[in-house]
Image (cartoon, rainbow, N blue to C red; front, top):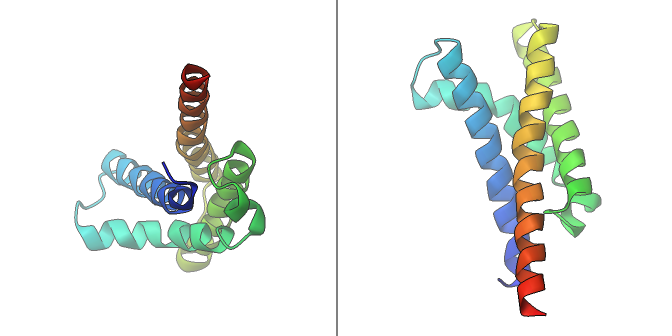
Length: 125
């Protein structure tokens, strides 16, 4: 795969991670199944994701675990602050579940891609 496609695919995977996190949360808490509700819930975290993707450390190696840690921290941090600002409520358990869920999803795909890349490189040599 051309290296020029990696940032776009990494960003897409991070967006999918946020949407999956929000969708699972809405399903588990009997939220409505409409698209606007999903987008409304995802908006603070997508804003955090957009903000953190402007950081050079993320753009240099977007599929790396270091970038992933920055993406998780920024997405969760900004998303939770915005959620608190808009709703006036931020239960500690929600903050913890958010951080852990986003870490599993965002670091998970990065770890998997590293394993696949290493195995592919090993087969070539």
